[in-house]
Image 1 (tube, helix red, strand yellow):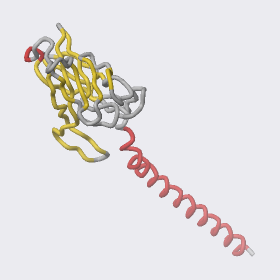
Image 2 (cartoon, one colour; image 1 turned 180 degrees about the horizontal axis):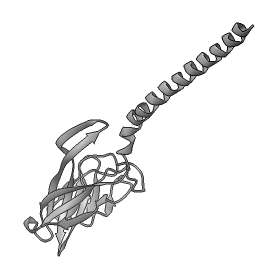
Image 3 (cartoon, one colour; image 1 turned 30 degrees about the horizontal axis):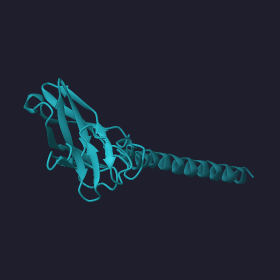
Image 4 (cartoon, helix red, strand yellow; image 1 turned 45 degrees about the vertical axis):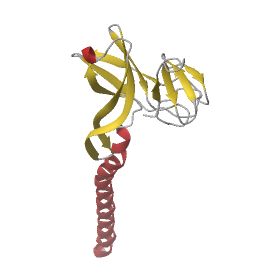
Length: 178
C-alpha cells in the first residue's frame, strides 16, 4: 500500500515540475519576443527631428533658399546614413530664419519659388494644381486646403537647424504624421 501512495505523489511532483518548467521556458521566451515586436514602435513618437542645414551667415536677408534636409534614418532595425529626407524653403528675417516644407498641402507636389515676373507677386506656387502662396506661406489661390506647412527653426553654433516633419495632405488642419 505504501507503493501506491508514493506513485501518485511522484506523478504529481513530476507534473508540477513539467508544468512549472514549461511556464518558465515560455516566460523566458516572452520577454525577448515582446521586445523584438515593440522595438520599432518606440522610434515613431510623432515628434520632429532637428536637422543641421546651412550656415546662418550664408543666407541673404529676405531671399528664399531651398535646402535639402539630410540626416540618418532609422527604420525598424535598419540604419541608413545621410539620407535626403526632404527639403525646405528658408528665408532669413533679421536674426531669425523662417522655414516651410516644400511639400504642397494639397496632394504632395513640390512647391516652387514664384518670382516677380510679369506682375506676379513673390511667394510660392504648386505648378501641378495651380495653388499659390504669398511670401509668408499663406494660401492665395488654388485647391490647397491650407497655408504652407511652416517648420520650426533654431540657430545653433552658427548653423540653421530645421525641425523636419511630415504633414497629412488634403486636410484643412495641419496634422503631423512624423
